[in-house]
Image (cartoon, rainbow, N blue to C red):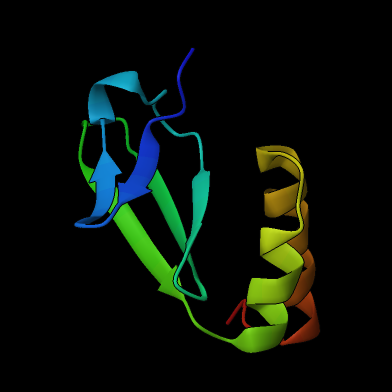
Length: 82
């Protein structure tokens, strides 16, 4: 299956029809990491991460499971749960 996110000179291209619901997709673009997922109601959610340390960890990740682990660790270390 093709990855649903790509980029060209005009910016980011997203193909929601290729996305699995409730699965996080990540894409590094211009020094930022975009996190995207399609929820159970087919709404597309997008988050942009600019924090340099976190971006460096995420863009070196090999798969979505590793991205989720990095984000979970970051949330716990930064005490962002509440």
